[in-house]
Length: 293
Image (tube, rainbow, N blue to C red; front, side, top):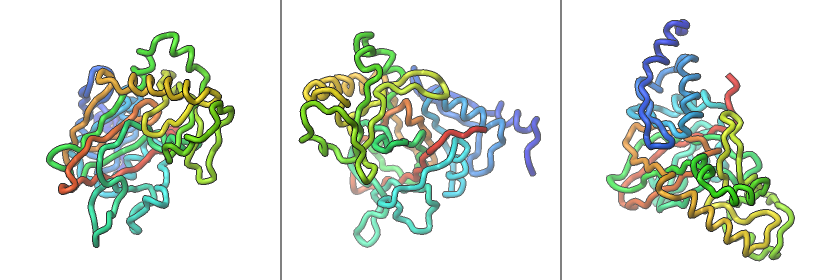
């Protein structure tokens, strides 16, 4: 039975919100994502997402269908890349981030180790807008996810640096080091046949909030278009160090049942190391396009 307008308002007003850090991130309670969510509540959650960039919804018990349904409230979901589509019976948008093995082989993607800060799929022409992880199994220590607020990072840049990077593009690649042998001065931004590299503005204006965010990252940003390589390397290194400062970072220590969705346009994320002897399993979906509802 569909919820009435009054019931929808009650559901939305039942949400309890707590900030996760001084500048960004919020925990949302008072909602059960295993069931369909009323439209008024969806609008409220999406507005919270735009406002806080990272949302944590703890204490959930979700199957694939429920997670996909929640992801679709934010927009159209992206299909998992072929190399990560490991479980044949899974929904096309689902990917498992896990070190789980079967017959000696990993059954999921990105199984172990730490990861530098990055923005998901920044190496394609149209990167995903958001990423959602659902925690299924968590190691006793490590495997935390670090989020870095790129609104705050951009706003804290010296005015001279803002002017210097305004209007510039940088190339992001899935294959770091691929362009090490390029000429000293690069005047164009190639895109590989495999769609594993793409150029994007170094400063992104968020279409929903109008705020500006720094859009480079240590893991995948390779060079600045049109800038001599030595100068490009120096500028990018300084930006990487700047955007990863503790004042911009929230570290999430996972608990089973956590759902976290972050805005890929204004937040970077990284992962801390963890023991290979312990199981870490999270289910991921990515949002490709904004919802128009």
